[in-house]
Length: 499
Image (cartoon, rainbow, N blue to C red; front, top):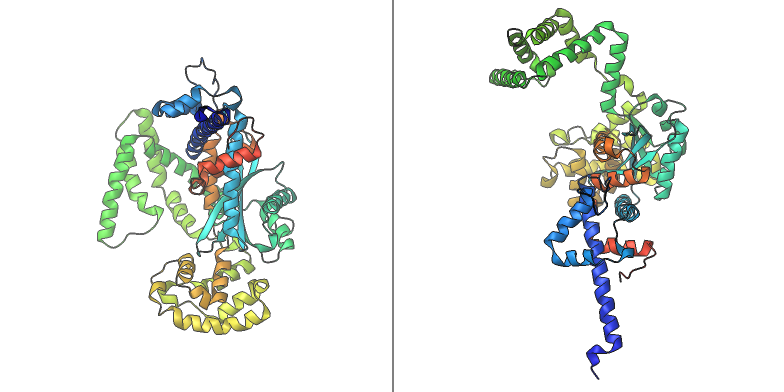
């Protein structure tokens, strides 16, 4: 007779309450895992048993969240044995869902656009050989994006092995190698060999996949080569190491150096003689070393004296100026790439587009991007470039820009990209060239945080997922927790209701 207590009503109410509790419990764990991944913190601990005084970060964070919310505390205390959600497998599944969604977003950003791969080799704390893979492209808003995409474990660093692994990742995410327009590597011999290097293998698949030697790595190669071949240069860097050690080992000397350098810079600015050079630190360093020879114990006095003698010697000063002049990198580029970069400079917008040249635009298309323009488009681009040259300099929103990337965004925002679609396409192609591998350096720094000495047994997939979520957290933080729950429910054979 009591309708509210009818068996159907009771079961439905019980089912709804159970689902809500299960979802709240899983949502709490997902939020905890997300937060730990964003902070590059370890999820697992050595001893997570109930009797442990410190059950490590994940469990302790869950306890903290429970102490702040009574509902969370209740569902955690009454969790069924088959829905604890604290096992390593569940944590890895949740991280995998996050990482897979991040890669899907990046793939969606790329669309059918041309893109560039930036690859660098890295060894983690466990000494495993890996490749950090970054994709560079221009999105629909005209913004240049460099996205960390994956960390690939390789058995060796032979060119064919690297090519196979990279191609596998591209194929797995439906990225056509024919849309590849740039390659950027660290410059190791097995990567940039003219005939059998990695860049040559990709050029066989697509002749417009231009390789540009990493500018940052060229400095390292030049220094290493010079130090190996010239004894005076080798001695220069040995003395430089001693000088840096003596000056920076003491906080007091470091403070003296800052004060001395501040005074020198103030004088140089006043006399309009400030230069962007490491040589600006020379006088300040000499001053600190000279003062250090008169104070401290015998050992520090001797080191400072030796360092002062070294820095003030003719040989050291001579090599210092010599190294500044010889660190030129043109020899690291082949003539073809030098010409590509030279022609691309016609798109530079400095001084109100004074470098823009219609003939160079046409030559750039004809010589380096013939596959991206039809014969009819090659004919029309000259006329379009002539109109562009007259129009663009008079557009208020497209003046006072600093970079080609800003120009590309401006063309999209003002819809000039629709007026000059061929010029816009050419600018986007040029922007895919790998001018540096700075973001791969960022991934190495992240690797040192995520996989440290205490976490050196991380599996390859787990490490790649953690790095991806940590580096691309701006993407990962967009995901709604309910979406993660739905994906978790779909991918696992659930023994408890979540819907």
